[in-house]
Length: 261
Ligand code: UDP
Image (cartoon, rainbow, N blue to C red):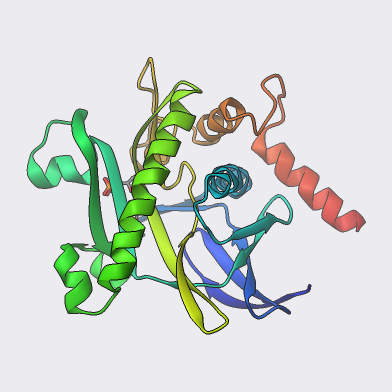
């Protein structure tokens, strides 16, 4: 299977065609953006870590029956994924109130929610991904009721699984963002989990110290992001505990390997 032309470039990833029409390659960039693209930079090694962490989470979810777009990781920066039609909604899942919800509703930062809260935002950068009600989804045909019912069930299972997975390694899963897409095969359309799950799309706090191990380090200038993402990868057993291999070294290593081929 060969890598074809670039189909789409987003803020953190690039999608390339392949010779198989139902599969594409997802490339993880080092670019970091926040506040609807107003804050931007490049953080060397971020894409490598997100590729590995997202692969780990999505393959674990697949083992508990959550269908998703990941086929396999190709190298340090790329994955083969199923081509889906993305549902234009960002599904925000919250276990603890922080970030935008605290400002929007005046809720105290760190409030533990009685039940996971799902919020919907329209995926539209020009509009700043506005918060919408479930009714808007049906009013404007962004997804069907049947699709959203299925997505909600999947979200609750994903959340339960991820809370446990992170709790086991001393991390609190505060909130995260999910995207879903329609995978079409044999004339049928099936909703599956898509995009990525990584410290770019989750809020992850150390269980004891509440240290932020996610993209808030960049958003709020809390200090280096790579050591925090590396810590998440190490705790999940993706990188060896003792290894001093930094993400930057991994990046260099992968480019050496590529040149040798
Ligand atoms: N999130 C994301 N992409 C977005 C918006 C939010 O991955 O475009 C994630 C974010 O990292 C956090 C959760 O969704 O884990 C909730 O974000 P929130 O709505 O609080 O947004 P913020 O405070 O970052 O504006």
